[in-house]
Length: 77
Image (cartoon, rainbow, N blue to C red):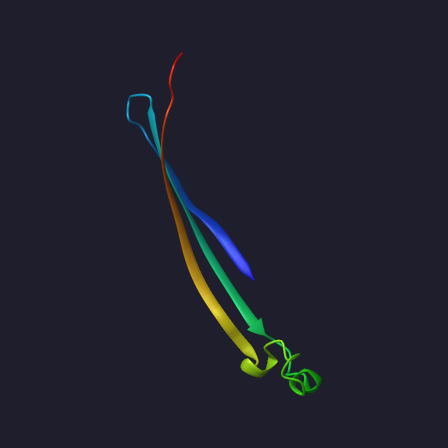
């Protein structure tokens, strides 16, 4: 499961042809092994697909913050 929220964006006024923008996104994701280990998969190490490595429950829990800072100019012809 993954959830993402825009945390905020800001445009910074410079009073000239330069535009500054700052964007942030917060993301939470998790993964779990929710089924019992499969005896058939465990009988062959070439087919176990990771069943051998994980017990039931949460196996991954991650929080990310993506921050982007953009500076651009506009030119008149």
